[in-house]
Length: 525
Image 1 (tube, rainbow, N blue to C red):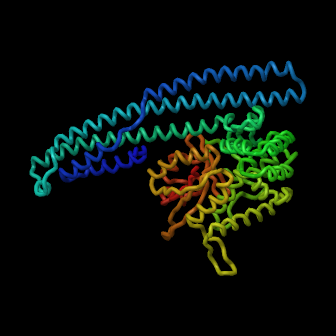
Image 2: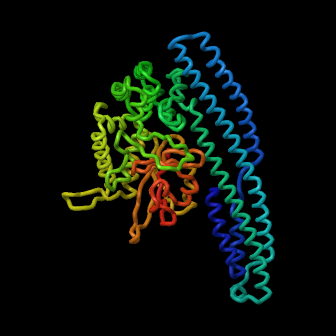
């Protein structure tokens, strides 16, 4: 079985310490042999460079395509069409231009990611080869294993030879360790970027012939009106894929009903939310009922009622951003961080559920106070569903947290039906654990699937304290984290790996105060 890049670097870090401190010939021989058994950084540099060149060639074609699209939008359409027809056509062509931009960015970014990986891999492989040469030379200086008596007695000459070999081997294994770390970092960065570009090349995600190419293009392009459109697109990559699959699986009659619902929608945003409801697993009857509640509502109303999180902060802005419904935060009530995170995460992937929270059963009871009451009731319902613990007397019971088994249970019950995957827990007890799981987190959230994470700390009295949050996005080496205190924050990969999420919480969860990540729930197909 091939070692992961993270396993390789962790193993070599341990072997570096073993070789550096080996105080007998036999111990040193065994450690050197173990180091030589660790696999070298894998990958073919020439293949990576060849793929990058092919990606760059595609960029030229995409650039020419975008130029032709822009020419149609700015010069030819106004000459042919006028009035609302022209406006509709212009919107479609603008969507096509943005889709071409996304494809161009995906090819260009993919080429850069592969070249960066090739640029890091080649010197890492050379450094690894140099280190192996030193290890083999040191191994040759030591000869065979000593017998029992020889191993416990070492004269001055033998000690000098061992120390010389140990010094050489220490440098050799350090080279292997550095090579493994550089290759691991480069591989992780390439995986992150390629997953991101794959998810953002959105036009082809909805694979169905039951909608027109125009509808598929517009649905992939539609965003909420507030915030950067790329960070506030209504349909995620997973939504687009699931919506296409759902359309393909409908009866001919239901396919026609869905097409009518889309045709009757008053805005692109309304149309996108109808498809998001279908992607979330609802029947056409349920989508139609939902459509009746949102029909004719303007895009700002749809955003406030159907999307609990709006991103206005740039990923470079690491300030906490509060998430409001009217004058009330999307936050937890009492010690309900696990169910509170799950409630908001479900509202992110399920617009029908989001409307039940913000607008009540008929979608019209949308006062701030009514929303707060329903949000609290849902948090308490999920707390009971996950068999959460309680404190206080029987007549005054209050939530007091939830164990990992309960968290897995409510994630599977409340999120999986609307994303199509199941949740599996991964421990994150070390920086290596977090580094290893990071590409899976980033792939999941790039596709639009929230990932629950737990963090822990000890208070001033040494008592254990835990908190649950959700990773909901990734961009440019940053993770977007929803804290059920009612905020979202962009956190760097480095801080995540180091176990410091104080920027998304407070100083109690800084690394220096023993803040740590202890569990993550990744969706598995």
